[in-house]
Length: 123
Image (tube, rainbow, N blue to C red; front, side, top):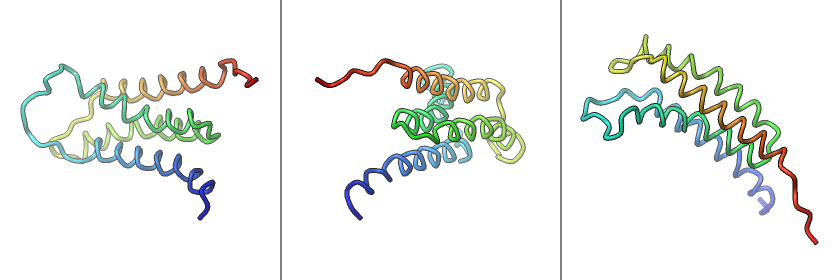
């Protein structure tokens, strides 16, 4: 495999790893323990695990970043429903859904603004 092909596969592999991390964060049953030191830290985690794949695909200028964003938008309510119904020790939280959707929206806005910024020409 040549270097160019290897480099081209880094972004899809990175997005795949981030989506796998999203699955782990959302679906691994939580163990009881002390509360988080930062109130509502779980909302930040939700926003980040939904924003990260969109940002990586988008900022790497991959055309399919929009598909990643749509997939994350669709996954957000499904994940909360699955947590509520099927995972012991987990619960579906409407505010987690807001954080999930906010992460996707924030990343999508960031990517869109990145694409619209003026480009500098090299001398």
